Length: 172
Image (cartoon, rainbow, N blue to C red; front, top):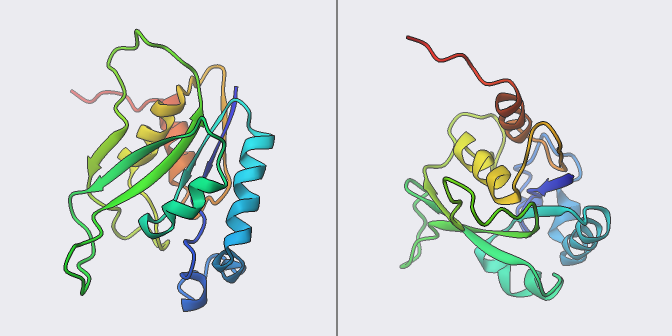
C-alpha cells in the first residue's frame, strides 16, 4: 500500500516568515492551497493518508474532506503558552483509509498524548512518538508499504519509517 502524510504550514504561519526551510510557505496561507492538497491526497493516495492541521482551521478543512475521514487528537503534554484564556494544547490529525486489522495487538487509539518536539531545527516538527503513531493509525507494514512525507521538514517521518524497517538493536 502507498500512504501519505502531510503537515503543511498552517494557514497564516507563512506570512510570518517563520518557515525559512520552506520557501513557498506563503502559498499555504491560502485556504485554496489546503483544499487542493486534500483533493490530491484523496485522489493520489486511495490506500490512506494523514493530514495535520490547526484547531482553528478544522471546521473549514473538514468541509473539503471526503465523508469517511476520521479525526484523531495529538494532545501536547508540554506546549507553547499563549496569551489566551484557554490554551491550544492539542492538534487534530485527519486521516483516511489505511490497513484494517480489528484484532491488532496492541490496539491503536485515535489520540496520542506526548510532548512537542524540541530542537529539531524545523518549525512545527513533530516528535518521534507522533510519527510512529501516524504510521500505526495507517496500519503501516514496512515490508509491504511506502509513505510519502509531502512536507519532510525535519525528516521525522522518514526516520520513523527507517527505524521501523531497521530496528535498533536492544542494548543489554
